[in-house]
Length: 193
Image (cartoon, rainbow, N blue to C red; front, side):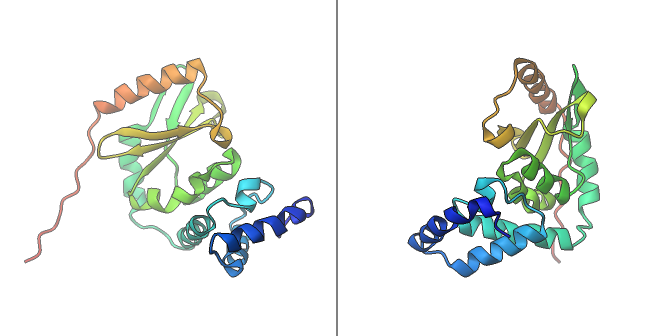
């Protein structure tokens, strides 16, 4: 599983795991799941996660999401489109169609959004993609939203380091103002008899 060029770093990482009270078995389990989910193990922080327990737990969740069909997500997806989808001035905010798209986004952007797939699918958070309209398949920025407050928790570019361009920032700020005026459908809570 481990690329040849990274084998020397493996010994240092195993020492790091032990020093941080993690198990080598957890790391092996993480690598097996990562391989199964086609994580890009050529990315250093994917191959050697700083927080192994968190990376392992996220990988386990992502495997479960991939294995199960979430019957509620199509309804949530339609609501998210009404709430957040937007296009103007050559940019678009789009909604992921499922957990696989979020996991793929994390791989392609070399950041941790793949670990948010389960939380997005269950409504604990919302993940969105900011793309160029004429190049919609290529990631540009990833957005996390708090639905309750309609506030942006974070927006990240490639490897969590690429800042917004002036044009993208102008679009992003206009989009934030636009969504403040849209309404989120409130869920009805069933009262027990």
